[in-house]
Length: 402
Image 1: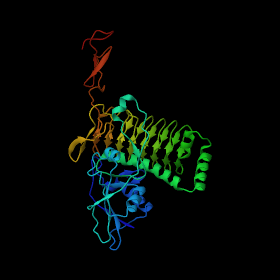
Image 2: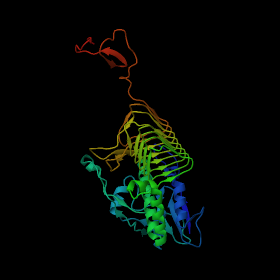
Image 3: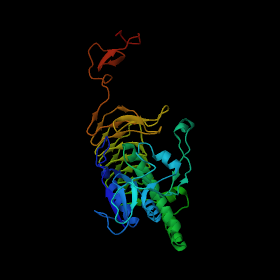
Image 4: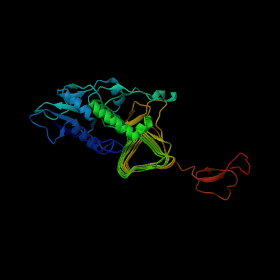
């Protein structure tokens, strides 16, 4: 069956790339779409067929192969309609029409359009086990659902995070579905193969056996890598922890760095002792330790210096972001920052949650407390005022009034 892609011209700050170039796992959104189409039995065509039904989708729609199979299996025509309330509640913010994803089946001879009657599709989601969090985070805890049939539109930088996390979930769910559908002899063979690689029945050993490691990778023997995909020429330093991540070719994860459920693009670098959870790093970006990074997107060739900090958890109202020129609620208490392509964030810079730093920006911290001049009169205990060392008042030992 053929499929036709509809161009929407979508871009969104701070990256402003054509939406098809958005990073999703180890490639672009457009590449992910085409792989899903092939796996679901569709062929992307430049024009619709005249004598057969076909699929239409927007260039900003992310979907899994399992979702496309479910659409095709309905046997109907029209634009997809979703009804799972929990899924819509969690994925709906900042999408134009979350209940009607931009995917449709068109009757033979019909024009390529996203208009038409509703085509109900059951995502067959199930409740996921909630994470165990400190009570202080309880306000940010939300119901979770999981499954292989997933779809989401990309209209905001926060959607880059959400789609990549959904793609990680979908990869695991589709592998699980394939396993469950396999004949008993194949299941037994796969289990034995995993146990042979693990040489143990301990969960952590099995998680390590699930890794997919590329060619010429340099992994320190003290590093811990679990349930992750590493491309070619990846370097992982001493005592680093990489859990549930997708790491692109030539990326470097330095000593003591910690990455969980992160997508690290080709040539990107996670600095020594850095913590990077639920993040997306575009190719060539460099992220230092800072204050730890969660739910953040780092653009192509972006640089973030040591001690920079991005807040990620609101204890008051939901995080607010700029969307289509207006400041609106992202309907979440857990969201970090987006750093544009080639942007540079200096030491000690603090960024509030939901902040988007434009492409090519250069941000430095206030300099009034940076020591730049030591006058001859500065003796004893001193402090810094406007970059100058001045004696501390108050009569301390050796101090002078100032």
